[in-house]
Image (cartoon, rainbow, N blue to C red; front, side, top):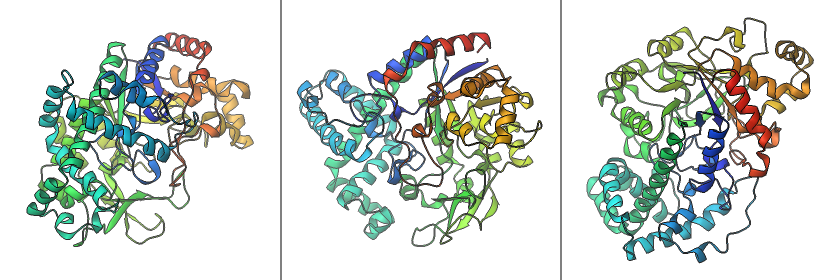
Length: 492
C-alpha cells in the first residue's frame, strides 16, 4: 500500500522534562499523525546513549533510553508524587540539554525505584516479574554492565578488573551479588521504559499509525554487546579493536567517516549461527512495525580501517556474510518488514543483496539535482519498492539545503519542480508524495520549513548534535491541512 509519514525522534518531542518522552506528548503526536492522514512515524534508535548523545552509539542494542521515561506516567502509576514534579528546572524548549536532564531525572527514577520496593502497586509486581522472565537473556548482562560502570566511576569496561573484563563466571556472580541493589535499579528502569513504550505503540497502531524503528549496523565499543560477546567482534587479546568501521570519502565528508565502532567477526557470527543478529532483529520487530537497518551495505561488505588511522581514507572493503544471515532470517519470517538504508557507495552486489530479499531501498530528494536527468534520486527514475525522503537525520533541513546550492543546481531544482524558491520545500514534499515510491517520509523540520537551526546531525561531528526539539505552537492547522490534502491527492 502507498503510505506516507513523518520522521521525528522521540527526544525531539515537546514537554516540560527537558527531553521528549514516551508520555502524553508522544500520544498527542500520534493524534496529529492521524488527523493529517499519516500512516507512518519513523524514529531513530531508542537505546541509552553514550558520549556525544548519538542514538547510533548506544550502550546496548536491546535496552531503552531511561531519559525517555515519562515521569508523569510514574506519578500515574503511584511510584512518584505530584509534589516530586513541582520543581522541574526550566529546560531549553528548543534543544535537549542532555546532562542537565540526566542530573535532574536520575534521582527521581531512583526515588520511583525505592517506592516500587516499598509500595504494593496494584498489578505492577506481576508485570515486573513477567518482564524479568521474558528479558533476562539480555537484561542480566545489561544491568550488571551499568551497575559496574557506576561502581568504577564511569570507566570503560576495558579498564575494569581483569576477572570482570574477561567475564570469569565466579567474578561475574561475585559482582552481581555485591551490586544487587544497583542491578535491581536498572532492571526497574528498563521495565518502566518498555511498559511505556508498548502502551505508546499500541495506541499508535490503534490510530492506524505504524512505527518504523531504526537499528545501526554496528554497536559502540563501550557497550554491553561487545563486553558480553567479544568473539563476534574483531578484538585483540586484550579485547581492544584491531579494526573499526566507517565509510570512505563521500557526499558528507572528503576524508570519509571514522566511527570508531569495532567491526564484526563474521566467521565468529556464523559459528554461533548468527544468534546475536537474529535475536536483535526479532527483538526490534517486536518493538516496531517495520525496521530500518542503517548502513545496510555493510551486510554485503564493510569498510574496515586499522585502529590508529586518523581518518577513514585508508581502509578496505571486506566481504560480510549478510546473505547467509538474511537467508536464515527469511526462514523464520517469510516477508521481511525491513527497509535497507542503501545510501553511499552502493555496488551491484549490494543491490543484489537488497533485491534478493525484496527489501525496499531509500531515495533522498536532496541528492537528486547534482547531475542530469539520469540521476537515480530523481522521482521519474524510481520504482515502487523504495521509501523516498526529502532528507534524513543526517541531512540539513531542505530549506537550508536549497539555500546552500549553487546557481546551476537551483535552476535545475526550479525547472524540475516548476516552482518559485519560496515554495521550494512544499514542492519537494509534494514531489515525494507524488512519486511511485511505495512510502514517502518527511522530517517534521521540513513540514515547518525550518533552517539549519533545526538540523539533527552533522555526520563526522561528535558533539553538539541530536538536540533539536519542536514546540506545539509551531504546529498549525495549515500544516495538518497541507499534509491531509497532499496525502489524499496522491493516494497515500
